[in-house]
Length: 260
Image 1 (cartoon, rainbow, N blue to C red):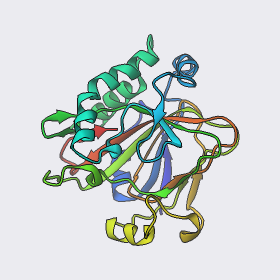
Image 2 (spheres, rainbow, N blue to C red):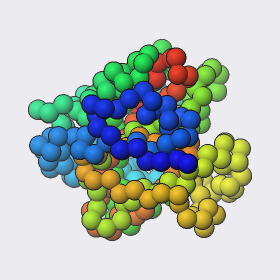
Image 3 (spheres, rainbow, N blue to C red):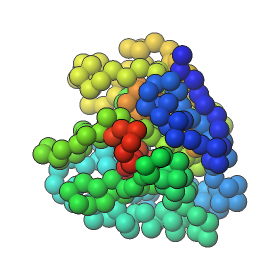
């Protein structure tokens, strides 16, 4: 039976992350990952940050940075990699004088995973990590899965065998914004069959009720397997603001790779 593991940054283990890959854990939850003073400082800057812009696929979703999932052609791929380092620095500046939570996460994963971790490289170009994502009032993040392969170059060889995500929560609405987890990993072909003619995501009535519903608190960190179906309920009042990260798994004896 899958479970939600609750732990601390100090106690996070290689086995916790491996449990997500193996499906024996549905999520790993670390409450209070961001220091309260750093969280309060960043929230003041993020609510109305001038660099906030619409996601390429759907401008109802806002972000600071440029997500790997937005890559659709050579020009967008070049833009992503060309801006990667500047976007990392932008997030550091927002959290200054405190450490960027994405930097702290990178160190935590590198120290926790037995063979370490590093930034994803694609065609000898480094990835961005630490995208800030906004889900505003009444915006529904429908059930979906995430897969790096959808946006890789067609001729890029990848040995990725699993993918994890790590979400750091900056603001959570008083009503709504819950994370829904179905605990099922349909695979790409079955997922596309479920999706049908939809441009993106699935309808909830296709799936039945989720296995678990989680409402993290501001400052929390949550690891999960994003190749399993998951969704976020609409926010009822305030925007839901998160820092999003992915971890590529190539086997228990190989380093993880990180990107956003």
